[in-house]
Amino acid sequence: MIARLEELIRLAQERPPTRVAVAAAAHNLVLQSVQRAVGLGLVIPLLVGREEEIRAEAEAIGWDLHGAQLVPTPTNKAAAIAAVDLVRQGKAQVLMKGYLHTAEMLHAILDHNTGLRTDRLLSHVFVLEVPTYHKLLLITDAAINITPDITQKAAITQNAVDLARRLGVERPKVAALSSIETINPNIPSTVHAACLSKMAERGQIKGAIVDGPLAFDNAISAQAAQEKGIVSPVSGDVDVVVVPDLDAGNILSKNLEYLARAKMAGIVMGAAAPVVLTSRSDPPGARVYSLALAGLLCC
Ligand code: COD
Image (cartoon, rainbow, N blue to C red; front, side, top):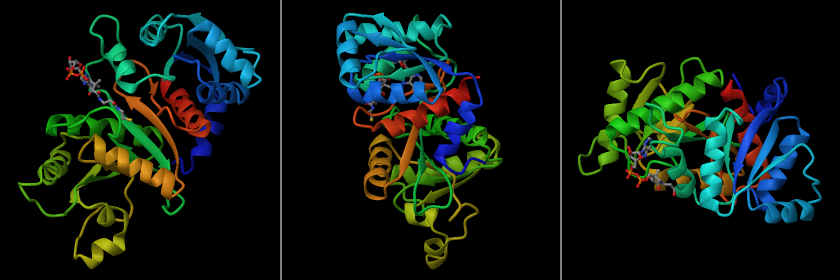
């Protein structure tokens, strides 16, 4: 079982470098992270975007673009489409979002004719190394599905469980989160969480123990659960938290990143290839961990 994000890099270095198509690459943080990943032997980049801007940004960070291929496009939208196409053609194994809006990247991925759709739901998983928690914590979905219904949440859960298993957790413990641990029909996330728990019991979600509704404290701390008299097979040892909606997940992840100094990686599951979808403000470290994770998932 992988316990630290640094291990992702070590494991990815045991494999040949991954060919990564970077959509809208002309940005210093994007190029810094790709340069670092090239230096670590993790990736061979195809930098898609405005050529002059990519060259200027690369020069500004002191990178001669050695080891990178440039694919010129006039706009961000064209860059997103071209990067997706490089993956479809097999010229790249991983897609990475550069400096463009998430929705713009997702529209290119979701295009019926030219995208990277499969029969699965696309969902995002953050993998966090939180200094105050004893194992990696997966948070889903904080970046793609805005207000998922129960069917979508089951798919989101399955995608995260599959990722946790790829990271070596044999039977991931999943907390379906809400703000309380009892069912209140006026709080839809409590009903969703209870359904997910039952769906896992009945084999509609496979390979995991799912419990919910749980509030975040009862999920993460066995002591908090005990004090509330909650008996849960996952409390205090959770691998995956499924959040009520995108807002909750986004706030939770960024809270842990900024206030608890969590390190993080992020990946999109359910597409025809791994997609690195970091936020435009993410530091290079998060992007390098994400590239290492994508490299481990692509073959
Ligand atoms: N997986 C697979 N197919 C999907 C998904 C998904 N997650 N979401 C939509 N689709 C398909 C639908 O089935 C349909 O065929 C087509 O895509 C369009 O569906 P719509 O009209 O419901 O979706 P859109 O195009 O309005 O929006 C889809 C987005 C993923 C772009 C949208 O949900 C979105 O903007 N998400 C938030 C992205 C974001 O801003 N994240 C930032 C947080 S950091």
